Image 1 (tube, rainbow, N blue to C red):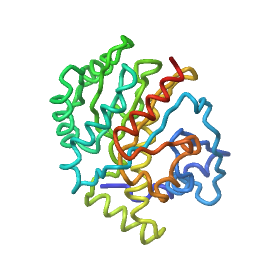
Image 2: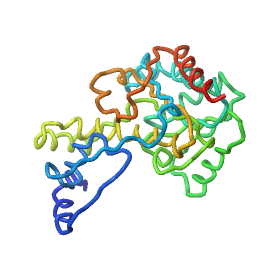
Image 3: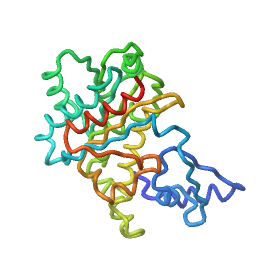
Image 4: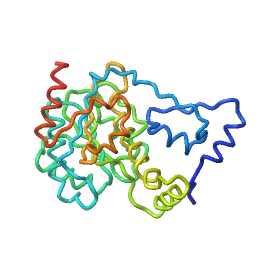
Length: 272
């Protein structure tokens, strides 16, 4: 059983109180969350600016590659090169997030073969609590180059706090779209009938929420600085850019790994 639309039940619960406050760093877009989480047209929406200095946050999109399902097999080497470009300017801890375990493993194999000296740690299916702690403990502030390979929407892309130099960069492969499934298609059909936004409600908005969660792992404190790289040609689309939060408006675009390496190098030079 799945809950198609929680808004009615949540509305009824919240109407029994004088007020209810819902807050998160990833309530984007606001209208969508106000709709599905209750309140609807009567909800007061408030968006506050990010408290963090944008000069300490490098955001770049590598738009010269497609990560769509049918294009993934021919993207492994390009993704590997973009990872290398991102980490080339500064040693430290990075995490790369993938849409699936299979995609993650294929790219990891290519990267490990070309860069055997780089320390790699990878998320595995069904990790125990102890294994998850061991994985996070690997991200030490020891000035070594270390890259974690994880899945987007998993336990390491949200709710994880790696402040300071324990994580200086996130690389997000794809736009976070959930895999096509019967459940998602039922959601799509329901919201297409009731809101005329079926695909957005079932796939696009939840996907962008995953991306924002993963990107949010990098800047955790006022004195943190780091890079977030988005890999997919769809990040250049005007429709996708409308989903970006306000503090993402300084995004830079790279068509290949060479341009990306230059963007990242210029950013880190400011902190030498």
